[in-house]
Length: 348
Image 1 (cartoon, rainbow, N blue to C red):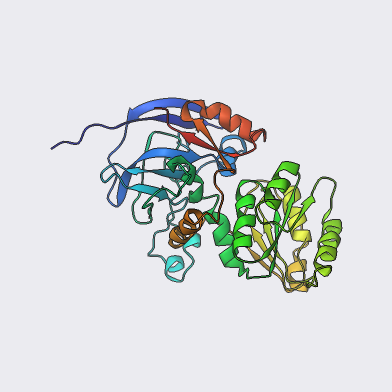
Image 2 (cartoon, rainbow, N blue to C red; image 1 turned 45 degrees about the vertical axis):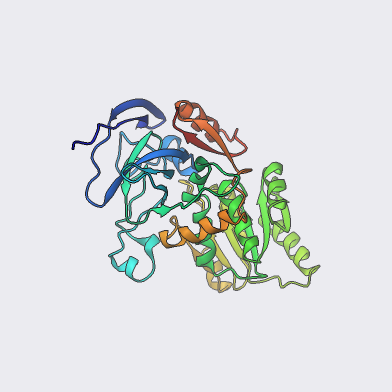
């Protein structure tokens, strides 16, 4: 029996800064891929960078952006979270436990069409099955698990952050806000740094032990304030874990300046701009620096368990918008006018 034709609708990026509405038949998925009915797709800083920041997606134009996808598999009806990055599972990097360094990995909205549409084809192997929607949540809210929650989880795992370790989060917005929560769940001592009082207030109510307003603050002053705060609690002024989540050069400069002896810098946010730094600080401080490209899909079930257990608060961090308003929503996000991470939901 011939399957009925599926028509997908959505927005594709046809040139830098330009989105075009489209409606077209959904191609049959290639071997190893499945077709997904999109229930929600988060709008990430990376999408904004592709659209407005001059960074071209790998597949070129036109491309449907969006890599934070939750949806249902058309053939089975199973609710799934689509990993933001799907590794090949067979290369040397994958086999040695560095799936996030896989050169053959596929990212929706970058290597192939993404989730700013009603339907999308994605690799099947790493889909994270959602057995039941956590109490108090709706399926669309789970979209941010695909990146905004799992990516900081990967960064924490890679850094070796442990209980009672100091976790300094520079940029406490979407990804950074979840990193604060995840660090608190791990028993660490999270400190949030941001230019937004609202974000700092949110961080303090979600596990942060201290917060610093970055406006007019340099790294030396921030380091002194943090050291004093830790000293008052009998904690050591060294070995800090610094997580750069702002995706700005000012945030990156702050994060690098906060490195301590034996400390760790995890670069989680992305900026297309370059930054002059004295790289020898890593040598002199015997410090470590890590990049962070998405999250190994093997971690997704564990992160979903944390969400289901109510340890990670999605409700206060996300906001629903109809997919039909995508251009206006992405433009507003680029102007930092939104207080929550937007999730685009296909119109009924």
